[in-house]
Length: 334
Ligand SMILES: Cc1cc2nc3c(=O)[nH]c(=O)nc-3n(C[C@H](O)[C@H](O)[C@H](O)COP(=O)(O)OP(=O)(O)OC[C@H]3O[C@@H](n4cnc5c(N)ncnc54)[C@H](O)[C@@H]3O)c2cc1C
Image 1 (cartoon, protein in one colour):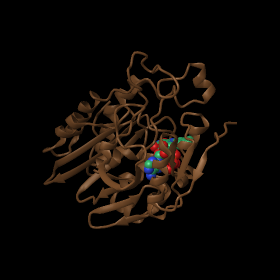
Image 2 (cartoon, rainbow, N blue to C red):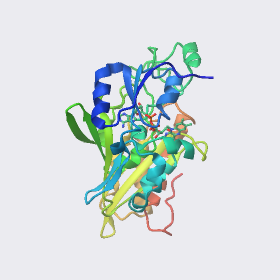
Image 3 (cartoon, rainbow, N blue to C red):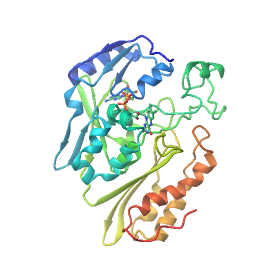
Image 4 (cartoon, rainbow, N blue to C red):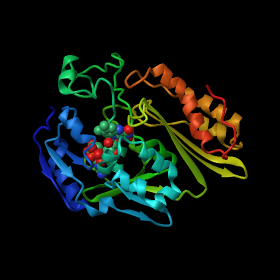
């Protein structure tokens, strides 16, 4: 049985108190929301904070509000509560779909949107228990020096694997970050860095308090995820797509890949191929073709990386086909 290491636990009741404690404790501290990522990582000694600052007793972090601008979802709101929320379901079904594919119902009762957005990067050489990792002399991400995925690589190649992220980026969501004496807002897209160890641009003491999502306002979105088991598994390739139509043509497009690098990947060439054209079979096939180039999965998750690359075209086509009028024939992408 794997046991948690010893740590001190704080249970603040306000955002201000939480950021004060976290900032005061320095690099040996971590926030915890649902704990469905952090605690297993601590049991495996992948993360070893001496101080843990719990977020579950801060009411402001579990609220959802809807205004003229859109939705503000508290970072510690459980995933299952978002899934059930009628207005989110109506306006952002793609987000609800992505959330419904995260782990399992009991884990979605504990897991939160903020924890998902800030999920640790994953890798076959890292997501193992201590003894397994010790037997290979560890890896660059924790306690070692070599990236076993590509031993010549100067940086860790662990992969971004959070289901909500590609859709949130496609929906132009923003993150609210609070630290002592300061609040700032950044695009969710700008939260990530293509580095498996330093995968977040936010400072460690910054608390994610909310995710803001604009009104759908004519945008339609979809999410498609590749995984081995339909019941539960992390994505090893995922696509978030959002399109806005004008007069029968695509006026704006956002396409995002997850599961293929340490940061989510925006497919700008594929996006520009769609703009100004009707979303017909040819447009979907052209965009899906263009998406395969920048998709460079590494050999560090389930399935062969070559096959995952090949699947990029098909999954981008699935995501785009879902945005076409019901009953239109699917694009022929093999
Ligand atoms: C068996 C299993 C299967 C899973 N399958 C999937 C899957 O298919 N898809 C998927 O996306 N995830 C999956 N997960 C991971 C996890 O359950 C979800 O990502 C969940 O949303 C994490 O949320 P949490 O609140 O539990 O995060 P926590 O574990 O509490 O936190 C995760 C990280 O975020 C930080 N953090 C959390 N909240 C904040 C905040 N407000 N401000 C600053 N830092 C914060 C923590 O310090 C920690 O580093 C799985 C987990 C397990 C155990």
